[in-house]
Amino acid sequence: MSDFSISKNSRVLADVTVKLNNGSIADSTKVSGKPSWLILGDGSFSPAFESYLLNKEEGDNLVFELDAPDAFGISNPDLIQFMEIHQFPEDLELKEGAIISFDQPTGGQIPGVIREVSGGSVRVDFNHPLAGENVIFEIEIKQIKN
Image 1: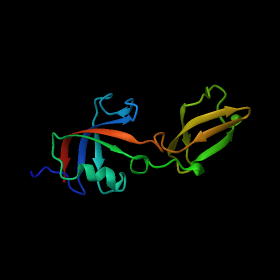
Image 2: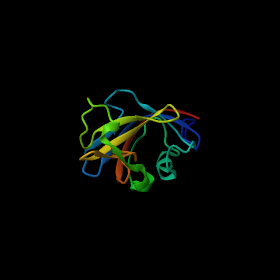
Image 3: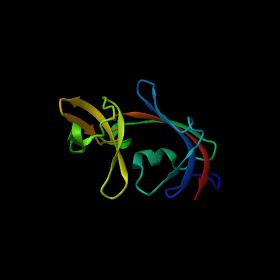
């Protein structure tokens, strides 16, 4: 094992592609040409996700599948909210599947997926868009900082 193997508190620069079980690509850093920094041990990733990276080295290519609880979590019904249609800007096209940024009281923003528009009500899902999905990760390790 080299000095550049991944440990529990490593920072890992990697190209990451997330695929659904049907083979479609949900997200990929390769589209932008900008790999992402993955910070292990800070709680951002599940233990199952991190376990696939441990002891890997620069240049390694990984492909692994995670069930929903270990990937982006299970959909939480408490994060699905109904909003009045008049709460949205008039020029905003509200269609199912659209992802809209909502202002948070803390000043940040959170994405919400429009799940249904019916009459004067809009059902917005604030779960991660891939919550409840089993996904396949393809990871190409570019750089490791311990």
